[in-house]
Image 1 (cartoon, rainbow, N blue to C red):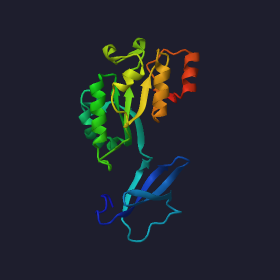
Image 2: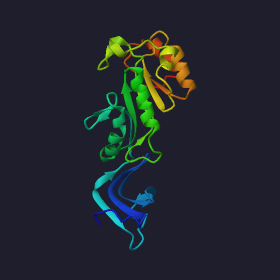
Image 3: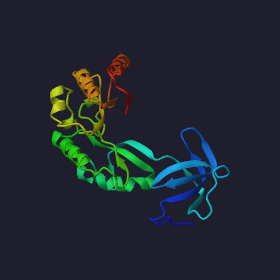
Image 4: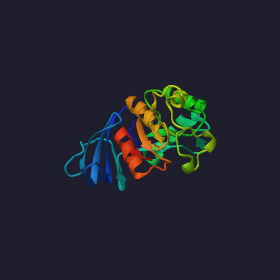
Length: 223
């Protein structure tokens, strides 16, 4: 069988040449998919397919868990910073490239851009059409000007609780990238961690000692 089963048949099986799980790689594997969810996986010899069950055969393909991308700035002609409203458009197309969940990323921008992106993510339906939007990643504006890279230096800010508050409500934000060596960064890191937001170091000139201090404050990784 080469085409998906009809919607009425919610349980079907898939045979693949290779299957990667978090713990092992299976050759000649089979998956049982029920109601859009994987219910069982295993070697074809150990997981028999019921007679008459709908089967998809992909002997030359490798099945892997969906990719989770923590920094997607746009794609397919879309730029989330220029047009946060394009987030759903990109979400619909990402699964074709193996991405099933992602964080739309806004680079250093005026506060109104962040607030617009927050509104877009808040308005998304609970059941995704395409890749699931896990929240927002704010890459900036609290970055080191010496490491601005592609960021507009005019939009960079020194970290402060006042500058953070100017960005508006941060409930959908899951990740913030900042330069931890900047004056005022300690207070911002503490506040973000108190809200449950993950903090990453990026676009930074932090010394080894400054990086260790940032880790002690709760910075989790680097972008």
